[in-house]
Length: 361
Image (spheres, rainbow, N blue to C red):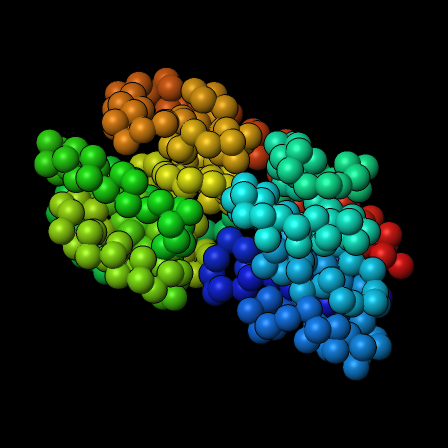
């Protein structure tokens, strides 16, 4: 079976990584899966023409009900959809988008939600048959580059490399989009850095998605830049903020190496479907400080697998706890690792997508 797979494929983003991983699952079952960037197409008619002119396509798949799913509305082959997170958390609030997403969900052979919460939200806001929505958490696999140089990484981010071994780097991994809210912690972190220059925040992401980094001599955070105008704003704010830095994009293996060396991985998003960076940090044995939103709370159990915060001031408070309470740090690291191993294995994810794709036959 040959499938057309549509997703938002900005380089080195979570969506791209997720799409590539799911494609590999499908192809491991003997199918052919052609992954295309949803941004290539302007309308459902273009995708319908592609499929009709190439009869070898027997089905389709899309990540994100609106950005990619809407492009499948005119095709004459069966398809499935995977919730992206912002479609259910944000786009349903816009009436025009909600109507389109309902049409997509009604026509889809199946839908996949990363969490029970996303499934519940879809059932609440969209006219859908819950029996066709399956919950499958993201599968996580990390790989650390052996050639990664921590001091070079800090130097390239314009962070001080004095006392490198003493630095506490908080790493924020995200795209420079408003929904990721990369500036949420900048002011309070900068104030904290003045109190203790060893604490820094680093924000990291692809070139087309600028990253912010905040450093407290042992903390680093990374963020991506996707919205050009917002990116300019972020860069200007970070440039004026002490202890906060932007890092250049890195390969997935180098990013994992940076995560493994940092003091903690931070998430400050307004909305998340399921943050791969959070789960990757857990798998790498790195503590997580995540903003208390539904998508994060679905995978981070406060004081057990990580720490949640609901304000910039509480972020600093929880960071202090992580710095001073070694038993707490060891507990969230240990439990986070076990949680990912138990709930986010690749084998179960692979079997789920193989089974669902078979329903398109």
